[in-house]
Image 1 (cartoon, rainbow, N blue to C red):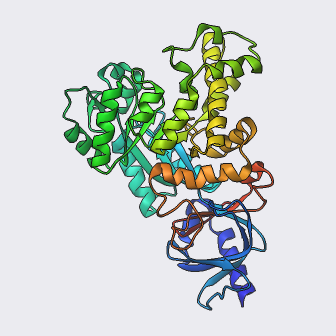
Image 2 (image 1 turned 45 degrees about the horizontal axis):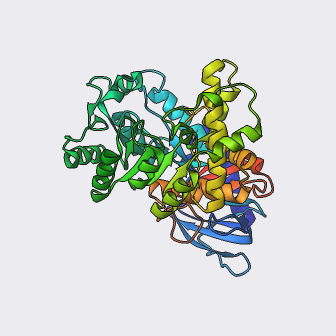
Image 3 (image 1 turned 90 degrees about the vertical axis):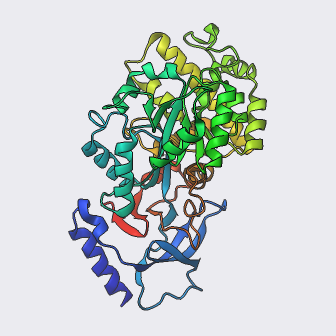
Length: 436
C-alpha cells in the first residue's frame, strides 16, 4: 500500500506544471527514513521519520520507533537529507517597484528562491506599499514565494538626497513616509515608530546620518513598541561600536568596520596588489575586540553580506578607486567575520545582491573565505537567520511543533557545501513544492 501511495503522489508531481506545484497539498504526511540536519546539533541524525500535520512538524524520531498512522501519506525517501528551510537575511525586493523591481520580476525571483530552498527572506528597506502586498500574498499562498519580513527605514535628513529614496518613495516626498522617514533629535519618535509599525514592518532599519544618541533613542523606542532594530554596521556619524552599544538586534555589512576609527578607509589601503600579510596587519589596527565583546554582551547578530563584496570584485567593470575600496571592505570584512565566528557571535546569511545571487552563494563564500564548516554555515542560514528575523520560536530548526519549512536534498551538505544545490523537494508552511 505504501509503495502505491508514493507512486501515485510522484505521478501527481510529474503531471503538475511548476507554476502550480503547491496545489498538491496533503495535510498529513510523513518523510520516512531521512537523514536530518536539524539546525541545532552538530551531527547528522540518521534513519529519522518526520510526521507533518497541517503546517507543523507533529513528530520526529527514529524510523524504527516511529509508527506512521494509516491515514498519513508516506514518502519513503531512503536516506535523503532534510534541512530547515534556508533564510536570506538581506534582500531588496522593492527599491523601485515602478521600474526594475516590478511585481512581475519580484514574483519570478521569489519563486526561484523558493524552489532553491529559501523559505523566508528579510527585506532590508524598500517600498512598504509593495512589500506589504507581496508579504501578504506569500503568507496566504496566493503567490509561490518565501515568507517576507520587511523593515521601515529611518535615517538622518541628509540621506534623502539619495536617488534610491526617490524611487522607493514615488508619489510622495522622500523622508516623509512612514516606511522611509527622516529623523532628528526633535522628531516625535514614539509617533514615528508607531507609524512605521503600522506599515506591517517587523523592524526599524537604521541606515545613515545618525549619531550615537539618536540611534540609542530609536532603538529603545522600537523595542518598547515590540519592533526589532536592524542596522548598518556604520551609520556615517555613529561608528560601529556606538551602533552595537545602542542595542540593535543585528548589524549588516562586515566590511563597514574598515571605515572606522579614521572615519574613512585609509589611503594606504587603496592600492593594488596588497598582500595577505598587509591585510592581517591592517585588521589588527582596528578595535575589533571591542566590537566582539559588545556584540556578545548585546547578543547582536552579524549579517556579514560578504558575497556582495565578492560579486563587485568579480565584476569586470569594477576598477580603480572603487575596486580598491571594495577590496578593503572584502579583506577586512572576511577577517572580522572569521573572528566573530571563532568568538561565538551568531552569524546569519544575507546577500544584498538584488536577488541575482541567492543565499547559497553567501553560504559557500563563508565556507571558502572564512573557515566555516558546512554544519556551521547551515546553522547560520537557518537557526541564526530565524533569530535575526525574530521568528525562531516558530521556525529555523527541524523539531516538533515548529512550522514545516524544510528542504529535501539528494546529497549530504555536511560533506560538501556545494551539495546545498541538490534540492529535490521544498516544504514551506507544510506545502510541498517539487523542483523537477
